[in-house]
Amino acid sequence: MMLVNLYPLKEFKLPVVAECINPDIFQGKKPKEIEGLEVWEGNKQKRLGELFKVEVAKEESVSEAAVITIHGDVSHVKRIGVGMKGGEIVVKGDAGMHLGEEMSGGKITVYGNVLGWAGSMMKGGTIEIHGNAGDYLGAPYRGSTEGMKGGKIIVHGNVGNEVGAHMKKGLIKIYGNAGQFVGFRMHGGTIYVQKDCGGRGGACMTDGTIVVGGFLESVLPTFTIEGLRKRVKIEEGEVVEAPFYLFLGDLTENGRGRLFVAKEPNPHLGYYEKFL
Image (cartoon, rainbow, N blue to C red; front, side):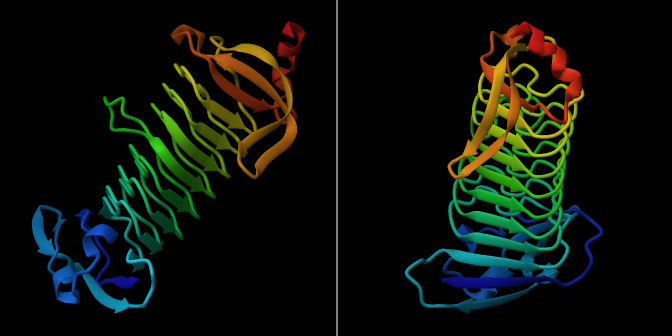
């Protein structure tokens, strides 16, 4: 196994585009080769070694995948782990936009906050964020309909708007609060928000599952009440034991998506029970 440590040489003021920070690209390279990889700082092309101190170590292991650890704040560094197929990235600080975009394997762990479009168009692998995440988590670029197709994203804090937009497969788990339009135009997969959720959840969804464990101001009128459930399964080994309202929709799209909303934090939704 190849171990690579990256240390920012300064506090970045300008955006840095560094999609070369990727286990697939680092694998098998010597320290000088890694330092020579191209990055952009603002509108100037630079070498990775001009922005980061690079330390490389190797350990004997059956696995040949590289493990990259970034020590420090890289919230201005975009496109870390883009398209990665294996290996591991650990960020001990905040990370920038487009983290793990289109990744198909491996794992990214961030011990801090992450900006927008983390896991955008993701196909596989795992992203775990121990802080907060910005808007468009697991969502595609504006105007695109190619949402998340697989993999798992776990956020221990809060997230912004349009989580899992156009999602087709995979799992997103949020243990904090989420913004508006969770699962917008969702076609499949599962989104779990343990705490409160902004409005318009599941708008235009055609399939998939959204679970809200906290407060939801209102359910869109284009959803219909289906029943009450005593528990909801999030994934293998994780079941939420509490009564949930089950709504189906979005009927404007002839959708058959499932929206589970916890009963106890939402007494204002009690009037739906007369339709059961």
